[in-house]
Amino acid sequence: MKRARVQLATLIKNIFSSTRIFSIVLVFLLFFPLFFHGTRFGMPRVKGGDEPHYLIVINSLLNDGDLDLRNNYDSANQGSFQAGNKFMGMSLDRHTVSFINGKPVLWEEIYESFGNSEKWGRDKQGKPIPILKSGVAGDVSGLAQYSVHPSGIAFLLAPFLWAVKGTPYVEPLALFLANLAVIFSAFVFRGIVGRYTKDLVIINLATFFVFLGTPIWAYGRTLFTEPFLVLFALGAYGFTLGKKSGFWAGGCLGLGIMIKTPFALLAIPLALFWLGQKDWNNLLRFLVGPILAMVYFLCLNSQLYGSPLTPPHPFIFENPFIAAPGIWFSWNHGIFAFAPVLIPFLFSWKKFLREQRTDAWVWGGGFFVYYLLMSFFTGWSGAWSFGPREILPVIPFLMIPACYTLGEFSDWGRLRQWGFIALCLLSLAFNALGAMDGYWNSHPLMIFRGEIA
Image: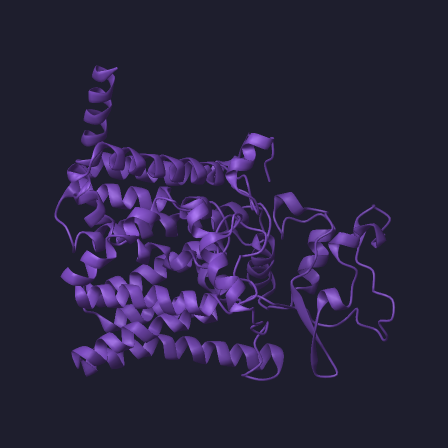
């Protein structure tokens, strides 16, 4: 037994002390879940939640050159691949908004929802046709239907997907790009941690736990916005603190704002950093990206929704006394329930603040402003998804001090070491199950009840 432990420890050390071996292992582990769908193996496919709706927006922009999704949803109902392979010819609620007499009306306010799909009609081929709710007056069949989600992800990915537009390969290639964003994020994070320690084993271990011990691993096989937001968040803060480049930091932030408007709040700690440094040139360069992103957003709102100040979906407030603790402690969507490895890392923040005061305030401020926003958001849980989806882009911010925790591991008592190892193994196990495409809107421990989502 002792010999086996020594051999295992030697193997782990060899992996984490080699940049090449570690990189190969990390990329493989992040990449291969793309091809799994629970127990099934095959081409990358969207699973559900908001994914098919983002795919609809992408296909509409590629195929039609517009963002009116009515014909694209109709096509998916008729059996096309525009909402993904899984949803071909299926009843699918539409995440859209139309304008009636100048007022925005959500699709589910006009038509019977998927939950009442037995009320849907059928055409001659048996394909589903949405049915109007009782009491809806007038002809609404020709109304434009625009996404309630920001359309930035479609503009971001369109140049890379143009060559395969109109084919079933848009879906797997879009998922591959999301996975690539997570892989790039891992190496960006690795470079960031390298600012605070030169120990290669610690740098690699910290990266391993952040990207495989949290739901980031699972989101690397999805077409949610979070894979891209993780990359742009780390890029914006990494360019600021590591490269002292306001232009590239602002560029990353601007791309994130295009995908999700609340991302703009992450500009606050970075702008304060440049102000504190009295670096006016970098501050001005930094503002270019966010300003261009907001101009894009205002112009798109004006064109689609009739006013620059009318967003695709209003921010709906939640009681912060429910959302704020829920983000941490919810069984189905809380940080601690899905990434318990974070707990010991939090205790290293005191040392991080003491030794890297400015950097620590910037990283901590980034997490705080985003957490504060989500604490007032009714969708803080991320709806039907895996773990703490909405807060995911800034979870790596909290885990920067992992380098301190891991550096002190050898000085701990045996009980504390085994406790830490247990948290690490639990985190890896939970998120491996999620990465294999299971346990959405529930906790991976539900496997003991025979449940898989």
